[in-house]
Amino acid sequence: MKSYSGHFKYDEIKEYFFDWLEDQDPEWINENIDDIHHHCFNTDYYIIGTYQAKQWLGDEVFHVIEIIKEYEKSNFGEVTTDFSEPEKIVNMYAYIIGEQVVYEWQLKKEAINF
Image 1: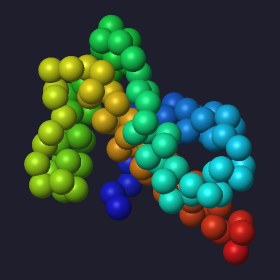
Image 2: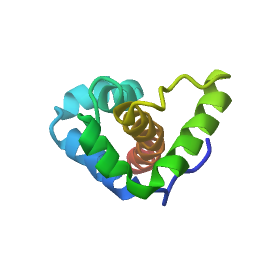
Image 3: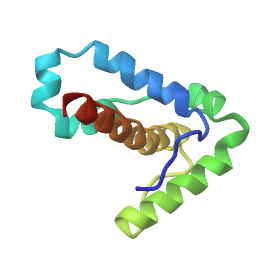
């Protein structure tokens, strides 16, 4: 897995994940541990609204698009994100960074429980 630690808005997305975790029942988390990334980053939007998405992306939009292209080509063999929709760009980027955040959280959780 490519590391995205330290990338644009990484800490914000990480904080979002931990806030989301706090809203979940600990027993539910343990039962769904393998699907936590999906539940947090794929069942709802990280950012809603075109204006909000454009503001969030700011000057980093092209860098974010390149990360999405690289990720999708590597994982799916093709790029499918609609880059004309700022919401879709933000939410796919949050999904990608979220994957790293969840992976690091799971490693730490496993180490504590080991």
